[in-house]
Structures are given as C-alpha cells and as structure tokens.
Length: 443
Image (tube, rainbow, N blue to C red; front, top):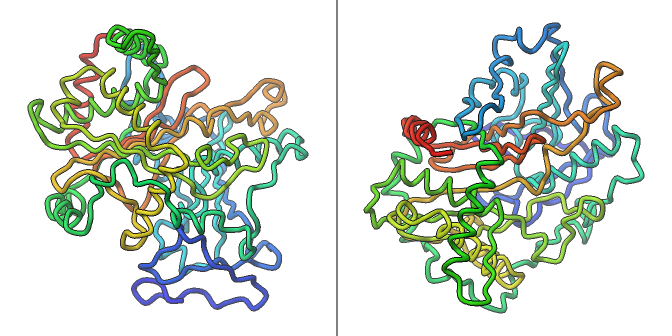
C-alpha cells in the first residue's frame, strides 16, 4: 500500500500476521488499512517504541519544564500554553501524521521518558485508531498493576486478537436500528455540510489556532453545581428530583464562557455542543477496568443544540439541564445503534454532524472516567523513601496532531487536590477574552 505523496509503505515481512482494521477505525479515503503483526517482537521491531532523555538537573532548573502549569489560588485560571512543551513531549521520529504511520515499520504505541533529578515526565503516544480514552485508561491501569507486582489483576481485554472473529465487536453496530435518532431531523446531509464548510473554510483551514491549559478548582465547580441544583429544584414540578453531575455543570459553564467570548449576546446563531462520550455502558460492556476492558474506540457523540443567545443569557443551570437531557435521551442502546446507522451512511464514515449550515460547533469531551490522575507510580520512584507513599501524576496534558480544531475542549480529569484540568483549542485571539472573563469571576 502506498502512502500519501508517493511514499511507499515498508516491505511486508512474510512472517507477519496481516489483519484488517476494525470497520469504524478504517479510512475509506486511504483504501483499506491493515495491521501487520510480527510473529515476535524484537529490539528492531518492539511492541512499544521507547526513548529516554536524562537531563541531570532538577525540574525547576530546566528552561522549559520549569514552566509546566501548576494549580494555585481559588479561581479558574489559564495555566499555560501546551505548545511551549513540544520539545519535551515529542521525541525525535515520533509520528505526527497518518502518513508517518503508513510509511514506517513501527508499532502503534510509544513511550518517551524525560528524567530529572527530582521529577519525571512520561509521554505516551499513539494514534486514535488504537484507543479511545477509556481504552487508554485501561492500559494505564494494567501498567500500574504490573509496576506494583499485581500481574494477576491485569484484565484480559474484551474481544479477540486481530484477524479473529471476535476482534471487531462493532462490525455490525448500526445495521439494525430499532428507532430513529432523536436528532435525525438535525442531521446535516451533503448540502448542509458543504454550506458549513464554505462558511467556515477560512477558520478551519487557514486561521491560526491557539491552545491553552485551564485549571479549575473543584471548590468552584462544587459551588456552581450547588447553585444550579437549587435553581432547578426551585423550578421543578412537585415530586421531581433534578440531577446534574459535576461534568454537566462544568461543560455548561465552559460552553457558555466560550460562546460569550465568540458570539453576540443577542445572536440567533445555532450552537451545537458536540459531546464525545463512551458507549460501553449503553452497549452492555464493562466500564470496570478490573474485568474485560474494551480497548479500542467506542464512543458516541451527544448533541445539545440551542441558540447562542440562550446559551449566553440563561443561567448555567439551564444549559446543564439540557446537556443532562441529551445524555439521557441519546445515550441509550437504541440511540447508539441509530447514531452508528447514520455514521455508516456518511462519506468516509465521518462522524455525523447535527445542527445547520450556519451553526457554531463546540466539541467537548470529559476524560474523567478514565481516572488518569488516580494511577499510582510509586514503585518507579527514584528514592526509596518515596516508594512507600502514593506517587500520582501532578499534571497531565494532551497534544493532538496534526490538526487543531477551531473550537474544542477536553476535560483531562481531576487531580488529587480536586482541581479540574481542561485543554482547549480556539481561534487565535479568543483566549485573551477568556482570561479577562475569568479574572472578573465572582468566586
């Protein structure tokens, strides 16, 4: 198979097992993509590419690492620019495009370690056909089990090996929907997608994007959730018991902040909040890493659609309630089946868009259930006195290449001090407005 721009894929090794990629992970635009599995892994063809840099200095003395974001204060803040740390997190030769993966004889996983005398940076890189975030969380759990000598707790992944009948558990998903998607009337067909593309071609393809890391104290979200629950309870029908999760409130508050810094407060423009969520529970799969974790991609998009003026002017509780409604209505087995039925019909199996040609799309994803901050790496501590107490990650960031979305936000998780960390990408110039709004918050 040839790669883009004429670069050829590596010659096939005759002892490799060749297996097709899963149906929804494959790319029609590239033809059929295959897995080539070595009969055995060797130093020349390892299962996990490994590299390490020994700095020989304390992290505070390093000109780049010393700037890594830290939590402080009681208000949400823009804590840093993740692009500043590119030299730390991208080892030489790391793939940065699909063409790199298709034209190099390398495994799907990479591990890069940057060692300081008093801290360690661990970089784990992969392409999105390998995992979604719940799959990555399962791998991290297995890794820490091995570090602690608990190999017996490492769960066997759900499904079979590549090429086996059980490998692609989703191959029939969406072939037998029993009900229409609740937003089928909002599904954007070719005409709407072209209109959306024409309206946004400059922003999507040419306008500069900027990424930032935001730290949000848990106490701030607790207060916001309490106020939102009080507002909903006051307006509820007798006997009704409203419910909002922290994730609902955080998503609603941030979507409102994003809209207020990019849209007019009286705008009728459609805002489509596109929330990526794991579909494991809806499909009856385990969400417990201790048994049968499903490692590959298994997510559905949940859509909350409203005019910009409502998102900006109505209280956070209103948007949080609508996000919760979207989760309840669109997160069922039947709706997931309907969602994948629509995806099967889209060109290139592209994720469906719900909204209209003139909408402003906001991509959101909450990685909290992957529990990335809860993994204890104490067995790897350099000093023996540190191995007797838990060593959790103090800071986690995501870096997505090669594309930066025009408006998207990933909630990485909540650290052990209860701070939420958010990674956001926006059009250049908008973050200054966010910083001003955060500085004026009444906390």
